[in-house]
Image (tube, rainbow over all chains, first blue to last red; front, side, top):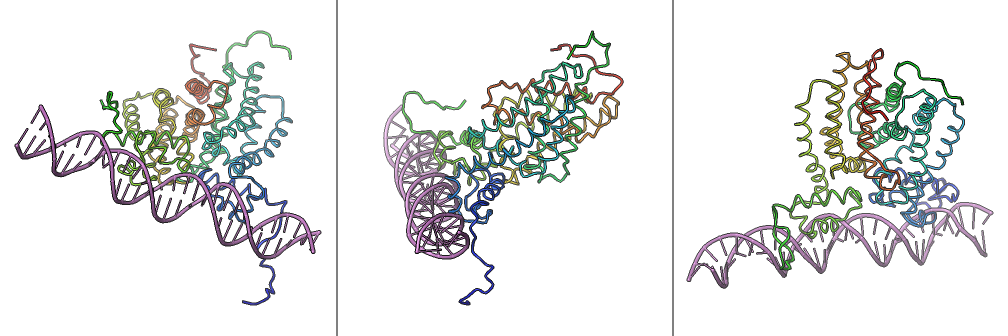
Length: 224
Length: 224
DNA sequence: CCCAAGTAACTGACGGGTTAGTTATTAAAT
DNA sequence: ATTTAATAACTAACCCGTCAGTTACTTGGG
């Protein structure tokens, strides 16, 4: 053992107050998604974040708050992105729906964020607060956006009349299946799974399914 | 009939070797579904089953084997039921698909069995064996049944040509959403959720969406 | 029918391993 | 020199799995 480490590069740790929280949250997201809340040990999270357990407690008061932070911090930036993108969306209902799905396919499906639905589904019973948060911030908004677009399409005479609320669920369900499949059963299946193709097929079938039937046109179109 | 309630005399317990395993499995299913595998303590399971922890170990070697038994024992009887019902199914593809969904809506949606998909999704990472079992025994069969019906419908000229495998996923996805919603986020939402209505709407939209172009199907007898 | 003697289902307390959370100490940064 | 990010060893609590002991039930001899 030399008395002096001439290399010097092998520092045990460095102090990076700014970067730690985000790194810890990212590591925790992976761990919680793989093992669930109760199945994840803080030593594992710390190791993956490149620190020790004590460091976690410098930035988060306890395991539960870390979990909540993971969901919130992972979601919020993307929520802004989605809302921003959707606010500058065309007026045509079908096109608005396609945009949302395009966004989902391009930005969510392959990102680390796609583990969150699985987390929420698994832990909703243990974390009612998180369940309500996700429900209000993500599900309700998506459901409202889709139902609104459907309703608008019906009013404009582009779609046949169906319950917009139920149509919204129908539209949401393949997205849910895609992310859950990728993160749960998919890895154990030998057949390839193409989430984007599934979304495309579904949209195709759906729009044909709600298209107006070729019947004699109704009376006068509405203004506005 | 089991002699569960003994009148008057305050017995601490009774010997019921035959009934115990099923009771323990039923209690464990509820606990695991609510809290997940790691979040469930065996004392809780035992208490809900009306016994103590030691009794669990008379019938199951350890917690993990209990969990596997829960999934297997809960699924297998129902699998036989489904397969039996579907073997006596009509030849028409659309009708076969409707039968599967009818069975799902009537027998699964409101039964305690509907918590299993949530369990599988949540614990697939921790129990690859269970994931593979569920994949082979439930998902693959359902997927195969649906894809086969779609393919047959295309060959017969009842449906327009689409990828039967992807169509099967499209068909499965609202069933997944229905059971997961009921068991996770649904209880926290103030809006009512009608899984059967969702299935009906989806089938309606789906069959119109894959109908041959020139000839739209008959109108539904019940609009609105 | 009655009552030991025997059997086995069931209990409950405990050991050992694990992990959430704490704290005394170290060392980077200014 | 002082401050403080980070560590590493530590504590307390929890929980799985075990087992010696208890109790419900069975059996066979009177």
